[in-house]
Length: 343
Image 1 (tube, rainbow, N blue to C red):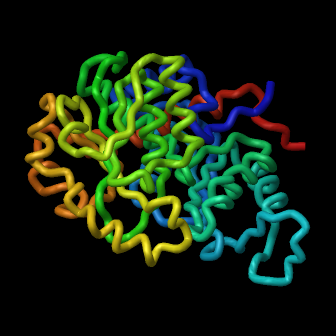
Image 2: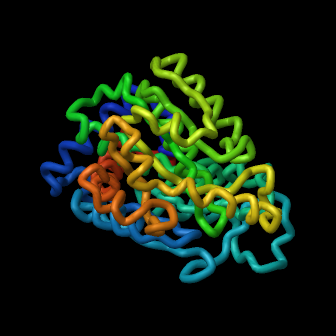
């Protein structure tokens, strides 16, 4: 049996994703278990985290396992990812050794590595995550790189809980760009578009201009999901028509890809669209819709206090669900017969 990783949800069947969500709901009702008894996970953070680190560490503990946190360049050696490189610079060891050695110690590896924000043609290759998966003899989990599949499942579970059903088909879903003073990663937006279409919802990607449309790979994934799961997909630049009748509003900020690595001229363009903030007027256009965000969120920049404090905001539920879906992911991957090939 080939080793199964959790790099993105497109690699998993709908039945497999449904099974993870079902298990996550069970873990939410009964937090303690033994699915990871005697097992361990290395959590490799190239970028900071609050929710991700906390939920993975606690999740492993609650299932009887142990988590080890590593931060290359801080409490672990800087890592080289390119083959053929003469390593006479700052990097001390190669991923080929790092992943293999960690795989001798632990049963799972989680990786969090954001884009460098210099060259999208390189960042979109997701080199760090794919290199770990290439060399690791144990399953690798994406803790956010250019997608955020753990957030996808937490979001999906929160929606299923709110609507009282696993069947989200026919729900009108708006993924809206929101303003942020900095150009941010597209990972959560890529993932939200992916899971919303995977669940058969009628999805609108709302953004200021065509420059803010997501990478074609994820637009293609979304179109493929619509063909397989039903629902629909459209892009809109009109705020009021996009919000009208929406059942779900999901907000995220991201930088315009045509300016990737050249952010100075993008900023005055982005600054023109601060009115994309999610506020009470826009939410009043919805079908008593719910609002969510992956967090962290800058209040009164991305969304107003009133929206965040509304009973229709499920962002806290989604954040809590990170713990439960990640436990389901770890348990599923760790249960693979004869995990990996440890030489």
